[in-house]
Image 1 (cartoon, rainbow, N blue to C red):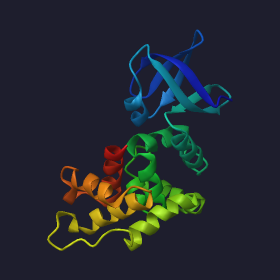
Image 2 (image 1 turned 135 degrees about the horizontal axis):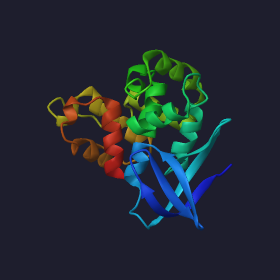
Image 3 (image 1 turned 120 degrees about the vertical axis):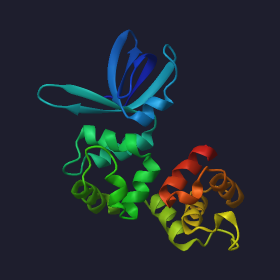
Image 4 (image 1 turned 90 degrees about the vertical axis):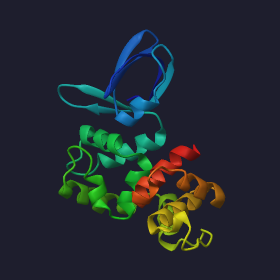
Length: 207
């Protein structure tokens, strides 16, 4: 129904906000991650939206990027993943981490979201793995081969395989090799993290 809603932010809490669009207060359900990106009350905001229609309600779900919206619409095509569960996934994990988990068949990662059991997570992987666009597959190819990463010596801090995988993924996404390595090395306690968490943290530093 609505491709996006644009206006002034009137109200916000952990899972919803109200946008004043031309004098109409529009209530929009949002993920926790989207909530953290919103400006202050009274400031301009634009959210890309999905409209869920039921017999007893029409609900808007909003996202701060088209990428999040497009991934959300894919997630809710999976049997057992309704609008609220899809939103929970995008609250627990960012879009890049979800895509990476799907392509690498890491159902356990997806199951960390509230309302997503192991069977649902496996179903998401099964139904969406072949639907992730080629540019996302290139990320995983970079992770698996590590061919775009410079040789790292054994005594280098970035010698863990998880860190190498994350650097490879960043290079595959188009970031420079040096910048990718610096971003990974700047993450606190990076040696204890898995590759998808490292990738997510490094992307935030590079944006």
